[in-house]
Image 1 (cartoon, helix red, strand yellow):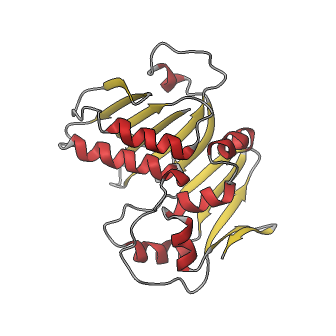
Image 2: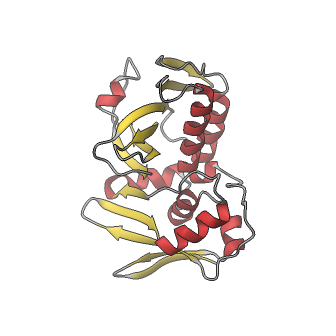
Length: 241
């Protein structure tokens, strides 16, 4: 499994952290982690804060883990490994820690405190693992949702893209508070590698989609009012009350 978290910037000043997960099971070996930048493997998921096109990358955290590992185990390994990664701005840091091959870079002009940026990249990567983030984001507000949060499922010939409905996104942003990072724009899962995503998360597709897009645990989502995944053509696909 190859995971990469990248802070990207638009020319209009917007920024965010995108996370991509790839299966490299078809590759028998690679001598350098940098090789995966050119041939990362088969896309399993992409968690997007800013859409592709015209993005400049100011930092990244790359992680290579054994294939077949679960999201919860991988999250624990990432937490342990990042504690040992030297946070040096302007240098490509490479190494193996806690059984993971890791690379980290932060532009010194954009990130004068690289340790803070490393932690931000790590946290977003953990959000992308869903169940790896067992307790969810602490809730700053006391608001309750008047109705279940809604996630739209949009399907094309390549796969399915999940997007938090705008009303639900606005309400959740208020509940999470102003200090919380912007919620992801979308989570895309190709049809060809959906089985890999299910294997990573213990065959819980919609539960993981809900946790990743809301950054909350299932118990927190239940307390708010639940969530539903809805296909605009075929109706409700799943719900949590």
